[in-house]
Image (cartoon, rainbow over all chains, first blue to last red; front, side):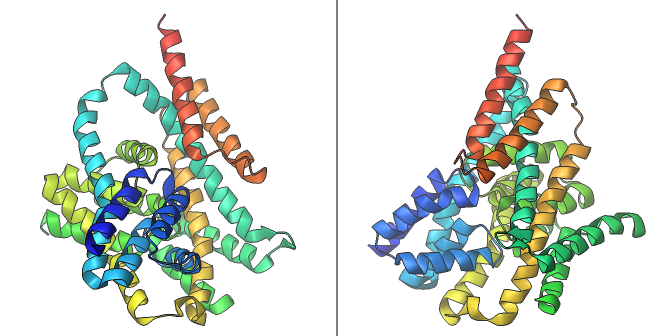
Length: 182
Length: 184
């Protein structure tokens, strides 16, 4: 039955989707294609749509495929299934971690993980900016200028308004700049 | 405002603007849940980020669940998570039913070109904020940070195919063995 398939298929995606959105794509592809829910082409299109709409890619894909296969109820079911594992895991970990935080091995592991993720996030930001502004043809001047403008707006607001601009405002602003410039 | 309503509205707002994967969202959470509402501390956000990256599921969902649970128990966790998911759920439902050519709409393309650039800036800013707020500046911590940074850049530039999970696993191992060795 399609409802059970949707629920189990996306539960599997939710359980095994490690490593952020892009790490999860091969797994999603595997599940989705094996059930024959959508074609490879539609999946590629949907990944592009997910990138241009808010929300995690795997949640977006669950909603889309659920709706496509079994209407609003299907969408609801698939989305719930994809979110459920991480929801339960975080609840369990929060309960366990309260005491575990005092354990010196857990502390040592966290002491290694924290600086590591800072390095990873910093590198991801730089790579993202680099890839948008520099490509095989050289520097993409428009993208580089807009990026510089956004950085200037974000950091000058700290001094001019005594408070850093909210990230939401920066995103809204960037959309308007995009409309004007591109 | 009732805490449940507040959780729901705050995460629905964050959920409406989480573009470009989980890392960009850290800036949004830092801004609303740490600086404005003071629901969690910066250090807690670091813990959740680490947890989220080492467990399955999108960071956005993990953060919503954690903050909701902390402020209002199980109901809070449910309300915050639904708030986070609802905006993208509705948007995708709309697109899948009404718009076959969403990506071809020219103003969507243009606006999104701008947003893509902002996402990179927000992720960079999340990293910079984390460094600025780092309390532990021991040599080992700083070396792990630098090594992870270089490893991440290298794996991208030379297409080494090392995932961030592997880098984090190594970092945990180094830190664990250093702590064991230090106590011998």
